[in-house]
Image (cartoon, rainbow over all chains, first blue to last red; front, side):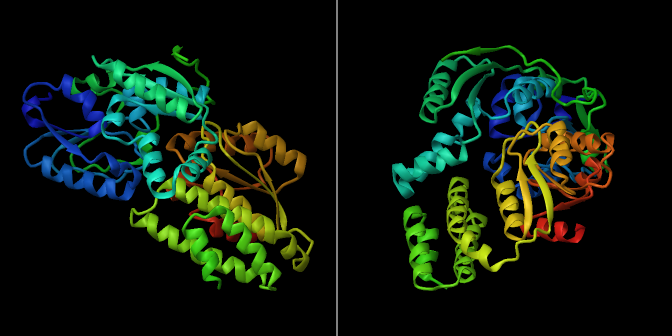
Length: 241
Length: 206
């Protein structure tokens, strides 16, 4: 049985944004640098160190991560249980399930996703563009962004239900316009976060017992849609353009 | 080695890169020497990226500049190269993924090394790979994917080849964090970490 006082959450800033409002009393939280996702090997190392530290005072460590470019594969906790959502990355966490994410990305793989958390930590294509303008001037920066986004058709803002959505919505719409992407809103859900924090840890989660190492095989779903990973109907999304 | 060309590439001066390449050719510089300068420049940019001092869009523009240079060089190099192709390859980014920077580099290197490459682009369904192999008679397939979301479609594509009775077709995978575990999961014949690995694999299969 999970005890909040003996449970620790490790998450990056963007996922933490969704975790904090639901955090049970007494449960501790460790924030890791958001930028780590770009270097999976570094992320793996930092995660392992954070797990080792957290396990000194916890029986259970909850990771607010997904596979994250295989960064969680190979992680292990000697003295405590590790729980990780069985998802590819945080986009599925924001949408509430692996299925919801598959439906969206299957319907339109060329989608750039934004949430409040990403905008808050200034890690968006707009922030990247500003740095490029500083370095190379506007025309060249634009050319670089056009090349990078050439296969992208849509910008989807995931509405995770925060009170001040309008500010972030406006920002997302501005970014979409700047890079000629179709703007859409996708309904987010705190279902996955709530389940991570409160259970049950069913087959939507990887549960590694003390001493067990997380493997890629752990992430293979038993309920994979037969023969086709993208055979489900996309969840409704509202066009805002 | 042309320092002028190296500087133009590392400073992202796209127009200058094309102009300097043409000048060098006019001066009688061998295409292979120009390629050496390009490689030197790409090493500089790659190192910067490793150290966190270059952004992904800069890498992409660098790749684009490489394509421009080699487009200029290719006709001249083709004169020197043998006209016989080593083999036919079908390549593409699997269904559900749209990342193609690395895939484009692999396709380009395979082409440069004497393979007849059919590039199907991005978000390619398994049946499209199978159909293209049947049409072209290709004996090698390259499946690319950057996201972990791409692993299942890769597996589906390998399965589709088996289902179509094309067991002899050799399939290589690459991109992102792909390793031996993922190769086993997808059932592919081999995986490669970079474009040269893909060339070596392909050469070993013909």
